[in-house]
Length: 576
Image 1 (cartoon, rainbow, N blue to C red):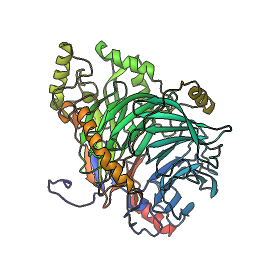
Image 2 (cartoon, rainbow, N blue to C red):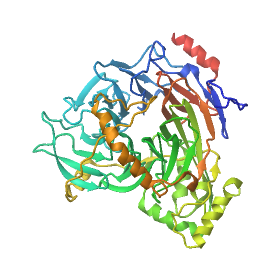
Image 3 (cartoon, rainbow, N blue to C red):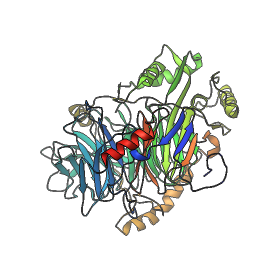
Image 4 (spheres, one colour):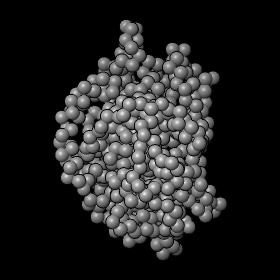
């Protein structure tokens, strides 16, 4: 990619980059890794993942970090931009035999300075509940692999719950567990609860309470990642068949779908206000999907290989208040009535209050920008700005900004409305946008486990679901799609024709618009920041965190948040 200040290709690793808000700098002394700091030989290993939790420690060091490297799992006090990392003193370290950690998630509701609940998924299909502070292992779920034998791809606590969690597997199935229930000594028997377009939900038939409570079967091939909406009411699933499916979680109803340009979808995230979803995958693109309109509104092109992680920056937000024309109030008002956001998370800052004002009916902004980022197997970090010229193309542009390169799209959208075209018709031109910083703060709603059980119990039964053929898309330089069964290759070959036919049917529709039919975003920043493929991107209040497959977790200080290098070095030497 282009070096800073030049246009020639270079393999130079960047240690800082500049955006409108200032300079982000890599803090070399705040790097976390294995204690020996030796690059990990990542051949054949599962992706390095990172999880954070805040334990509200009165000392000011409340952040805790967990990351997996190969067969190892580490748990540290995270000192961020304030102090140098001390790798010689992990709070907990675990080495596993015969299996590898693939993903993990903290429960923020139960976290204290004395105890945390950490779920860890494994390559052999098990899920472990541990407390790395007390150094205890509470429970092991799917221990005998009777529920699912395939790799765990994603594990998440259900928002607002201390006991419910959701687990996705490379088999394409997803299971709802309760930490209080056992898994039983025999394979579970299921009864159809809900069935829809290429998905089905089953409940576990048992005389006594046991896990799993529910089994979701979604699409074809692996379910690579899922993400709960900020209010916890909806679930976005990114699958290897290339489809993004968004469900109402309580009722197991399909809200909407989107298809990748080609290949599988590997990652997904929600905007902090729940209005937009961004997905990335094997088409090397980031795709922005509108929750209210159920359609693709933009694509981002900047990566040279698969996109492995997408994430919104909830701290970089700029909302300018103002009255919008009456023509805008229709669909957005309807959306506002449908979705009621909950309280902000612990990391909420003043930007949340500005966002709340934006969602109110009394005053609406003319200018708003969502900042999100992506990292990929091309070792590049990209930052993107989603601005009002893309979000509201039928409105006059804000006076504070000029985007002459998208005016033609605005005019075309206005013309289509005048000629009676449907509201969701696609623009004829392909505008490009490269703007400024923002986003918002997520919220959580409390989901009571008994409420969920009652909701599912009232659902009517349907006819038995159609059988699905498992396929596993493979590609060199890929991560996490390795299977030990040779039959997977046969399944892949047998389903390739149907996949191609399906792609041909969806291309050019609202499920998958052609490239020229939606605005094309250009990255605000696109920098090579690692030697190996990137697997982590997390935005925190004073920094952003990235990680590569060599096992190095890097902290990038936000503008104005850099602690002097002399102070960090002195602290680092003192710790040694």
